[in-house]
Image (cartoon, rainbow, N blue to C red; front, top):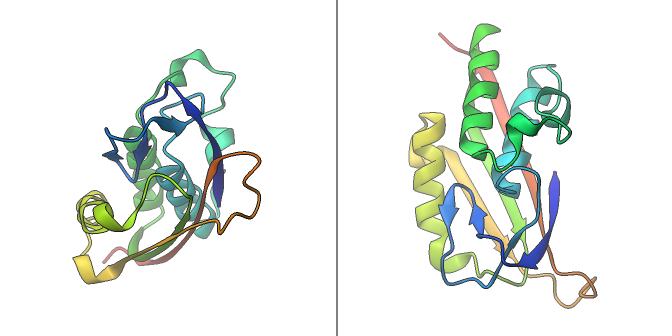
Amino acid sequence: TDRHRLVAGRACMLGGVHFADCPVGPQGHSDGDAVLHALTDAVLGAAGLDDLGTLFPDTDPRYQGADSTTLLRTALQQVAEQGLRCWSIDLAIQCDRPRIAPRRAEIRAHLAQLFELPLDRVNLKGKTREGVGSEVEAVDVTAVVLLGPAA
């Protein structure tokens, strides 16, 4: 899982896709892409490796503004070194804005490319917060990955 507060003045990156028309974006030390952060933690956790915060601490200036795609690729490399690869992805993105549905296919295609998966192995659901917890605008992501042998 990952959660980021949405704030004005930040680019809105989710799943490696830029939502240019969104006036708020995920706050974070890196680019704040909560989708890629949740996926990175899910991949690392499934392989029994250290988590995102341990590998890329927000106290390290090298990761200030970092592209979360680079962090994910590093995690995938570590998983590959364990003889594993990702077989499927399932995601739920919960936020009131940006609206996920209009960009769902684009995010799925981008993730399929990053993970070298067929499109039908990448699932994504966009959910609204239904007014619950609306005192702080945020994006919440839950990611599940299935790892298996690389060969």
